[in-house]
Image (tube, rainbow, N blue to C red; front, side, top):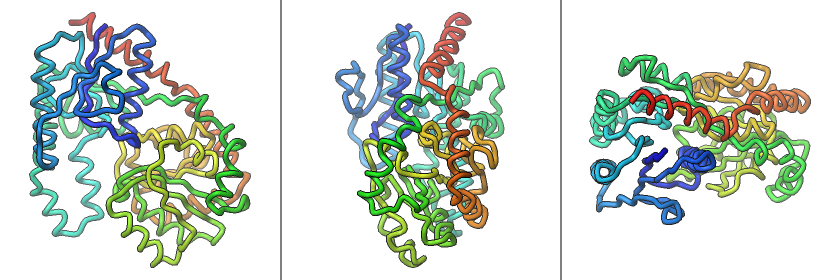
Amino acid sequence: MKIALVRQRYNPYGGAERFLARAMEALRARGAETVLVTREWAGAADAGAIVCNPFYVGSLWRDWSFARSACRALGQRRFDLVQSHERIACCDVYRAGDGVHREWLNQRARVLGPLRRLATELNPFHRYVLAAERRLFASPRLRAVICNSRMVRQEIRDHFGLPETKLHVVYSGVDTLAFHPDLRARHRQAQRQRLGFKDSETVFLLVGSGFERKGVAALLEALSRLPAAARAVVVGEDKNRARYLARGDRLGLGDRVLFLGGQQDVKPFYGMADALVLPTLYDPFPNVALEAMASGLPAVTSTKCGAAELLEEGVSGHVCDALDVAGLAGAMTRLLDRSVCEAMGARARKAVEGFTPEAMAERLLALYRGLLQGA
């Protein structure tokens, strides 16, 4: 089975890229031949990648030129299946890892003023993405859509009317041996000493880049309502990082919150933290939720996060609206009780033990075989 996988760029901190790397590794282990079609990817030469990197200026030209170049390159080669992680119409299978762009814009509009909402609606890049998304889902070539959550499956049905038979939920996989509650014994003490945290303090962790979408503002507001022994660490990148630092200062948080930037290895932070907090405006299915839960951390997330499907309210985590700061603060307050937090973390681990890369690969291969047999 020869499969082309399309992803434009590699971000070492990106969940979609980590999913794709795991998927390629797992598929190859089962005898499938995978070829990556990309603009740039760390180690792309070793992966036998097809590099499509035409000149561009700006994000609209970047996405348009890559789509054009990738479709041309794919047309010159033979593959059993082409699976795209980008919104291009020349694919057999589309993995909707980025969710539905219209839904993201709808959720983002909740935190924008009237002028910024209008600017977003008129923005040429967003208009291009919306048009590309419509073309993709209307393409007669499209045979299957891989949804990384039931939430995304429902959004695609609501916005585009695709039949249930084309929509397949395949959850991401997590290495449950690497992301394991043992990280606590290995990293908690040393990492806390390095960051200046006491063992008695409760540390909430947010992992993700793009602070507006990930809900960093809500985390800061909620943290300001908790006792001083509650601390927070934000691991991720954002061009407006200084704005969030200033917001934390205005809330009187001081060194109660640390912004540590992107990290190649997040495992020590899972080992150091007590809980994951991700009040995201919109997240189809963040890998960090799987990683944190597999590491024995309870998760607090939003109703527009696909990972909320794996949580049992009050048992392995909490779910609230992304803008419900009072609800978020209440959930975090309940986790200040160490015994409650640890018990919920143990149940969170149990909830994701079956979500391995091997299980994900088997689901993907079963889907591919079904498509090829029906061709």
